[in-house]
Length: 279
Image (cartoon, rainbow, N blue to C red; front, side, top):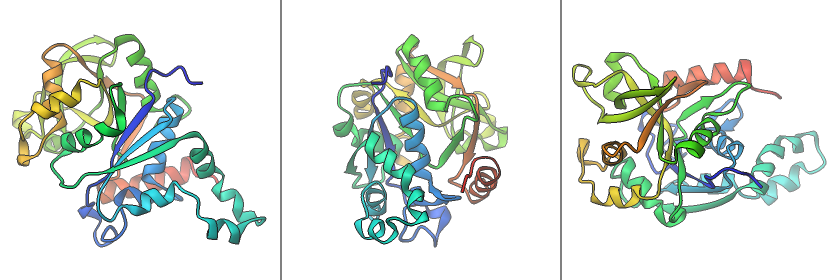
């Protein structure tokens, strides 16, 4: 049994992926393959490596392919049984044996905060991780980003967000934080702004798609009014915790690829083919 205090990981996966149209017209963006694995599988593997076995996925219309991916395909397995191609399914079989998948639907797209709140029924009253699959993270030979964050949670027992420096002219794409460094690479956050203009950003430290959240975040989200773009922003909800000194920003070890954009997706594909892919 894992000694991780975080047992469940939430995957908000209801978005449309419009930047990849027409590819995402009928295929979930989370199923876009980086070399030979879909984005969401990389995220699930990262969560498993961090000791989590419950994968809670918030989906929407047109996302059935995600459920099918983490299920048995009897026809395919029958066709390749006994052939050299059967080994290609070893990884996904391992995942299916180790993880339990649960699903719920986000009926309306009302922002990341709303998507996380939609997943409450799958999470319950316990701390949990959140992975945005289109932020693909590579930890190298060291621990993955979620594993690093779990080790911090064991000590600090509060919400933690992964952060990295971004160019000032790109702060309008992210939630941006400010605070006091309490240890190398670890910041106690006192301010958070969702997608600020460069001249209004409190820093150039941006939140990327890895979170550990305490369960009181659900009640906070319920009380959080819509913010930028009239959406319920997780950044606004976390700011409530941050004002009480209960949110840390962690400058993770590793590399992150923005696979929500075409250039980032291509960069990730090249990197993983050269450094990770094994036929």
